[in-house]
Length: 159
Ligand code: PNS
Image (cartoon, rainbow, N blue to C red; front, top):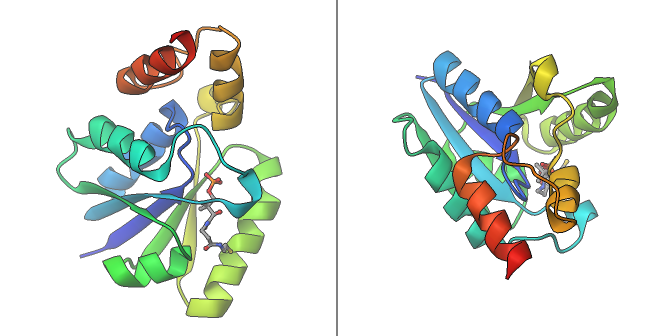
């Protein structure tokens, strides 16, 4: 049995993330999706509990996917949940450098290895930062995020 951990900021989760989880759920026996703090990204839009609530809403149709949130090192969470690997998605070469560095650091401090999955090219422009920005300024992101996220963004920016 292979269990993988798919960590991210998920602020908010978008369709590129959904694709990664659905692919992982096909390839591996169990997938744990975890909302974590990215210390380089500041406060963000939704708090960790809200992000995890949205992850729950998005993945309740996948029986081998569970969700959690964690305020600490991703490798500590990997150990806590018994993950064999960390999964990361790659949208473009620009992701590779920072993801490689994190994968090497995580391997060096814990021995936990990271597997990379490519994102479909039609979703490679999706980024939570841009989705927040477009939604905040009144643009339509409804085709880029799952329905629960679309509704939550509308609540947040129209009230
Ligand atoms: O979606 P993101 O922002 O690219 O995800 C990055 C994340 C949250 C996975 C990364 O910042 C992280 O692992 N944060 C937890 C703290 C940690 O373990 N830092 C050391 C990374 S080498």
